[in-house]
Image 1 (cartoon, rainbow, N blue to C red):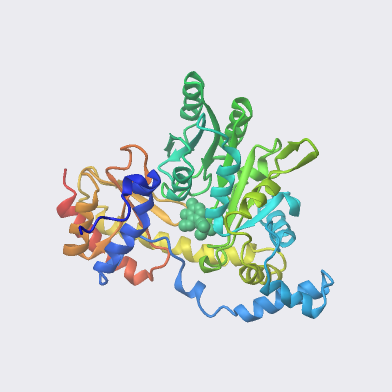
Image 2 (image 1 turned 90 degrees about the horizontal axis):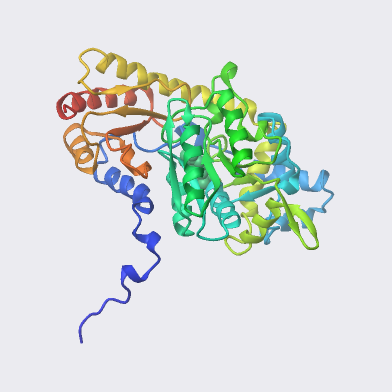
Length: 433
Ligand SMILES: Cc1ncc(COP(=O)(O)O)c(C=O)c1O
C-alpha cells in the first residue's frame, strides 16, 4: 500500500497558502536559528512591563468591584470567573469610562464588545460588514498583517491604498473607491492606523483626519481604526483619534490592552456604535459582533477580563498615567535607535540608505538600495548577528521590497547600540546597490 497523503493543501482553504499567514512564524523561526543575533524584529513589550504583575491582586480588585459596585454576592461574584460569560463582555462599563477619560471617545457599554485581542475584533468587524464578494476592504499599504490575514480567512477582496509620510494617501483612497464602483463593487471599509502605524511608523495630521472622515461620509464607507500605538505620542503632540472626531458614526474603533496592559491577557475591544436596523428595532453594531463572537470564541475569558478590569480599577478608571510611563520608555528606546543610526550611519552612509525619525510608535523604517528579502536577512543574521523584518511582508505590492522595519521596544539601550553597530556594518557591506 502506498502512503497517500491524507489531505492536499490545494483542497484546503486558500488563505492557508497566503504568505501573510506565515509572516510571524517566519521571523520566529529565523530568531530560533540565530539565538545570539540581536533582533530588531518583534514589537514585543519592554520586559520590565511584563513581569511581577500581581494578577491575583488585580483579579481580587475586580471581584470586589462586582460585589460592591454591581451588588453581586461573594459566591456569585466568584462564579463569574469560573463560568461562561456574556458574549459582549464583562468589563464594558470600565472600558467605556477609560475610553472617555483617555481618548475622548464617548461610547456606551452596549456599543462596545470585548474581544480576544484586537485581532478577534478585526475578524468580527470584517465578518459583520462584508456581505458578499462585491464588498472590498481598503487597507493602508504597508499594512499590519492581522487585518489582511483576517480578510484572507473570510475571502474578502483587499485593495491597497498608498501610505506616505503623512499617513494614508486620501487621493489614492478616493481613486480606489472610483475603481471599485466602475467594477460594480464598493469599498465597504478602510482599515487605517492614524497614529504611528505598524509597520510604516507614520501618523496623520489633524487636518488629514478630518478630510478622511469627510471622504468616508462622501463615499459611504466605514473606517476601521486601529490605534494600538497612539499612546506613545509625546504628550503635547497627541492628536485625537478618528473615533474621537467621528460625529457621523463612520468609525469602528479597535483597541487592545496588549501594549498599555500586557499581550498575554489577550483582551481587546471594538467600539461599534453604528445603528443596525432590524424588523424588531435597532441595536448597535457591537451587539451584532457579539452575536458572531458566540460562534468564534463564545466569550473573552472572564479571568483575562477580570485582570484587565482590575487594572482599570486600580488606575482610577483611566490608563493615561500608566500609558505615559510606558510611552516614555518606548520613545527613549526609539531615540536610542535613531541616535545610534545617526552616529553609525550618518556619515558615510551607503547611497540609497535612508530613514526618518518617528516621533512615537514601536517602529522605524529604513530604505535600502537593494531588495530586502529573506536571502538578505539570512546574510544579516548569519554573518552580522542582527535581525530585522523585511517590509515586503507587510505589503500587497512591491512598495516594501527595498525596505526594512526595525523595532527596539523590548531591547535594553546597550543591545540597541550593539545591534545598530552590527546593522551599520551589514548595511555598509551588503546594501550597496
Ligand atoms: C497595529 C496593531 N494592531 C493591534 C495589535 C494588537 O493586537 P492584539 O490585541 O490582538 O494583540 C498589534 C500588535 O502587535 C498591532 O501592531
